[in-house]
Length: 143
Image 1 (cartoon, one colour):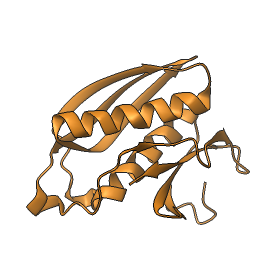
Image 2 (cartoon, rainbow, N blue to C red):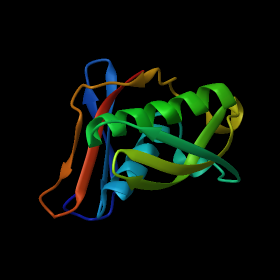
Image 3 (cartoon, rainbow, N blue to C red):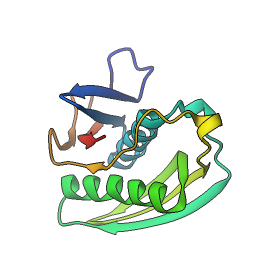
Image 4 (tube, rainbow, N blue to C red):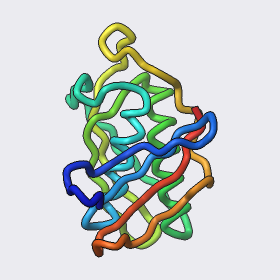
């Protein structure tokens, strides 16, 4: 978790793309915070209402691949349903992730989208304990 304890997600620069990083006391919270960072690449999180729930289930053989699968599932849901998400609840059971994402229909006037995210990559991919005994989940997304 960041030293000041106030921010639970952040972006980091990577060439023409954008890094997303989530911090949490648990792996699940780190995944949730990284998902917020993902939405924040597109728009100001304060503009996203959380009145529409979408269930997301995915599976992968390890934590890092599960994290990429999670973000790519969110990107797919945003693209196909034309939604933006502003709240997440993640549960991880071994190699399976079960989540609910809450959001609303994307509105160009209201949300002023900055970019479209094409997908999560394996660049700078990391899911691990951090130096505060919490978790960090990060990767670069292709914009």
